[in-house]
Amino acid sequence: MALQNNHELKAMQNSALASKEGIGIARSYLLPKVTFEERYLRTVNPGYAFMTKLDQQRIEQQDFNPSTLNHPDPIDNFQTSVAIEQPIFTRKGIIGLQMSKGESLAKQEELLRKQEDVVYQVVQAAVAMQTAKSIFGATEKAVAEAKEHLRIAEIRYGKGLGQYADTLRAATSLSEAEQRRVSAEKNVRMVKRRLGLLMGTEDSMDLNDAIPELPLLDLAAYAKAAETRRDVKSWELHSDNAKKNIKLAEAGYFPYVGVGGAYQLNDPNRPLGSEGSNWQVTAFLRWDLFDGTKREYERAQAKHKAGEAQEQLSSLKKAISYKIYEAFLSVDEARTNVELSHKALQSAEEGKRLVRVRYENGLYPLVDLLSAQVSLEQARANLTAKEGEYRMAVAKLSYESGVIMKDLNIEQ
Image (cartoon, rainbow, N blue to C red; front, side, top):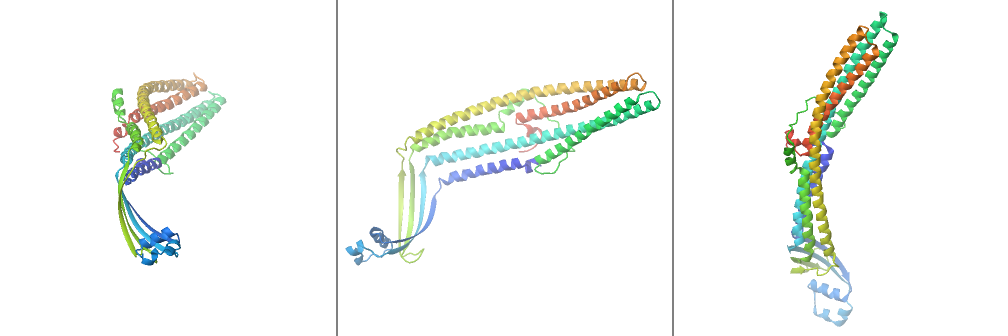
């Protein structure tokens, strides 16, 4: 759903499509240009007047009279022309087309990486929801246990075996447990809304399915997979384009060669009239011999830009290697913490059970039971958090190596 409806992803899709249209724009510089023009002229300029009548094919003997040539009457002309120009050789156009194709491919790779990013965000939200629900379940259990403690304290006080202060402490503990439950419920609702935001809606989204377990490989496999990560491919294409930009700057030293032609109608009375007609065919070579050293500076600038792109690519690869190493260590750390949290929870449950038995037998004060209860709740919350951290560490390792969609069996 997120891959279809996420707004950030849709924006990136439009960006990729816009870049693809750039190929057509670049190709257009290699295709013929056809123009149509309708022009109106009224003049008493001697040269224009004579040439206009000549274009209209209305020259007569009296038009050569010196007085007429020097002081012509006003003349009107509607000129209709269709012209075509076709490049034969334009090195800038050829290199520009290659660069636009490379830019489009780079945008496609960025789009695929954005898809992986959205998938990773969904996994984060899903794990956060599972964790929030588990914590909410633990707070509900804590409320039930606090109610039981209050019930026992009231019974002992009623039988003269306990103090009234114990019932007050138990009631306070119940109130605190209920406050924690309210906060946990709010967190569940917020995570649902966050998941809905990723899906491109303002509604809350629930998650009932279990989160799939991602496979865990060795460090070398993740490092190898990262070599073909989508953003790495994108930067490789950007770096290649930066090198082509040097050639683009050097293309200014080459001439521009083309052919063209035009067909023209001229009429003194109406647009699109055809009193006189003519045509012409041209071939031309345009060569900028000196442009104020602009090309030299553009070439030097392009070289620096290519160096910048190469350094950024090298930096990205090394940063990815570091992040994968960090994520791999985090997985190992999180797995160990989960095991330790399980042991801590078992100890807290057994400790709480023993304290409760002794409290019911009048051997321990209520404060010890409440303290044991707090330790148990902390152990439960800590285990839930550590389990969520482990899932997130595996997901991050999969994301950083660029295989998260493959691990989730999602086609790009």
